Image (cartoon, rainbow, N blue to C red; front, side, top):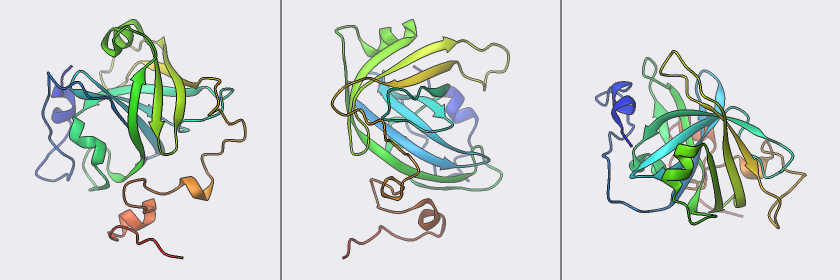
Length: 200
């Protein structure tokens, strides 16, 4: 698992994003979902695999409704340090826009087969223990793109039917539209406001 493509796309003298490092022996199980207001608003789903964050761009965001299959486009691996990145990527830099830590937590594989092997085989099944996303999910590869290297493989992110499934799920509801790390909205992050204080 390499970070070369991630680093090649970014100028770390200008972007506040972490350069990070590959942690080959790291065996954690972190996941993070970041809401990214760039040229198009989208969500980025990341699973810790092999010392990096394997990443997918999800245009409509994840869903807790098993009937909603979400397109997920594989992007470059990100460093583990990216799991806590929240801020503004400046104009002129790759991915310019505002990034929010929309959800974060741990995950575990549903099978004995390693996540690395599942990823290589094009089907990953796992259980999330986040603030907003919980229970079983599957990422299933549906097409491998060729040509431009910045166009990742096409996958589907699907919520499994379990006690956490919610057919009334609406990612646009106000209660979901804050950072799980700082409590801020995208607008508050863009304005440079500090961590939101809890109040009445």
